[in-house]
Figure 1: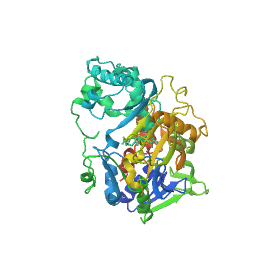
Figure 2: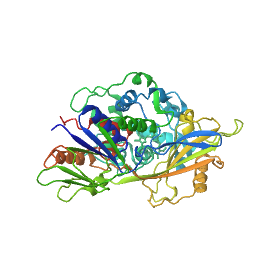
Figure 3: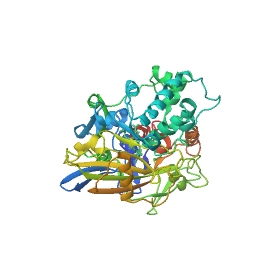
Figure 4: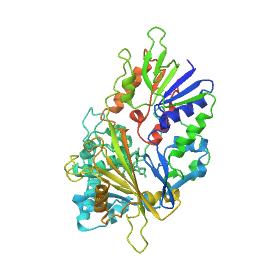
Length: 498
Ligand SMILES: C=Cc1c2[nH]c(c1C)Cc1[nH]c(c(CCC(=O)O)c1C)Cc1[nH]c(c(C)c1CCC(=O)O)Cc1[nH]c(c(C)c1C=C)C2
């Protein structure tokens, strides 16, 4: 049945993208976007603040995007955002210089940015051990026999990396990568959900990941169809771009989506109103959505972009859905710091580059050597200083929490954080001009082992009675956590509703 009224639950990136694409695909349908918060945009939060004489752009959520997601490039084109694009070239230090802070290997290390760089990777004698570990793990892997057990169709990132590259490699390099993307424990994260290309490389390489990556992969969609995107000149502008953002930050996308949707005659944006229950009428089989205002609405179709545990709480025992509470959600404290830039005669506050990640320490997440639970620090000014009106300030962002023992509210002091950062950077940081703290509670789903299989089962139930394909469940907790995954999921929703 062609949709008459579509309720989109959640006004974050996925919900806004879903409403955008559905409103274009079904111009005769009425679309209502329900968002518990009066502000739309979800975890995307770009904010301009005044610091001394400068106007500085700060991000509490995603801050830069890679140009590999064509669904995001398409939105940039369709919403006319090309002129406010800020691109960071592959040749910039922000793209080439990424660091790890590994205290037991001597502190801060620049990571090699290319295979040849690995051979020339230089450092102090203690640092050489980290180079040796990386080099020997990667070089030995192709000669290791195939060691995936028969019948295994998913495993944790840590189990996989340990099996192929060794436990120390996994603890340091894989855990750091997982902190930077999922703010999670690599020992719990599903490899197939988080890094499907690594799983596929192992298959292509007959058991070796390195050999698999050296072999060309066949690009196609799972159905073999070619997907076309309306890209205009955007892809061309992204040539040689490592990452990009906008002059006013990632919020440029969500703000433009909200503006577009508010201007559509077939869309209603309901901010500040939550759904408190979802029922299916036993005889008419109609959806009944109850709102905080005790209003009942009966859409013909529903798109839920809510965190899965929230959707679970809305369902009645008569119409349950499987696996909605299988994953936990990670919380991250984001601390934006703005400093006065030191005079050029003094050492800089940090090396030029992307920033650094802190791997899991040998004692795990008990906090022994990392009491504050620091996951990493981004040197924002290295890549995005054009967002600010003055070059006299330096902005950086520290992220804490994730798998470290959660306590609510998180226990830390800003002087304690600054002391710790000073140790990492090997120089005493001055008093910041501005500090902004955001506690992003349950912001990233931890897609645990077995997630792809569980999501297949959920899809199957949604296609059967009494749901009969009229409700789709999408979002970061289902199909992937990146901005590109969320926008792509919104683009693909309701493809079978004709
Ligand atoms: C709030 C903190 C977040 C952390 N991870 C994410 C958020 C919102 C989500 C995320 N971060 C990255 C990706 C991958 C994107 C992709 O296209 O594959 C996702 C889904 C990568 C990334 N991590 C950091 C930055 C600046 C980026 C952007 C891309 C890039 O420049 O490579 C920094 C960072 N994020 C987190 C931590 C702990 C951290 C530390 C340096 C957690």
